[in-house]
Amino acid sequence: MWPVIFEDRLREWRQLRDNVASSPGDVGLMAINDWWFKAPMVNRHLSWDNCHKWPGPWDLLAEDTWCDLARALGMLYTITMHPQNQFTTSLAQTSLGNLVLVEHGKYILNWAPGQILNRQSINFDISREIDGSQFSNLG
Image (tube, rainbow, N blue to C red):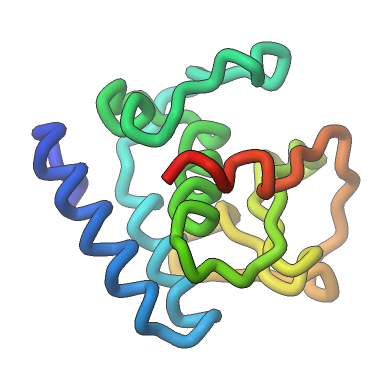
């Protein structure tokens, strides 16, 4: 269940990040994917055309409005903000939706709960992509 109160979301998100820190890579990524898939969805909230105006992580949690792009951005923030993050990440607008690519597609998040894909298991075209390192100074 998704936390309704902002303080609860913030606390659970912190717990998620702490838990991921002590988990093997793919286990931690699955936990991130699954936690963000609990967010209640709307059709559209964020737009690639306004990426320079995307909210930071705390504002994103406070707004509590989740389209697939906002959810992907939350996943990316969760991965990149950890001080021991060793992953190469990017946020991609693809023919299959907005996806988080980890290690150049070795892991793909924001596809479905309980599933982390890889580039060998699905084919898609990327129309836009932002390197996750651009978000690494937020924490």
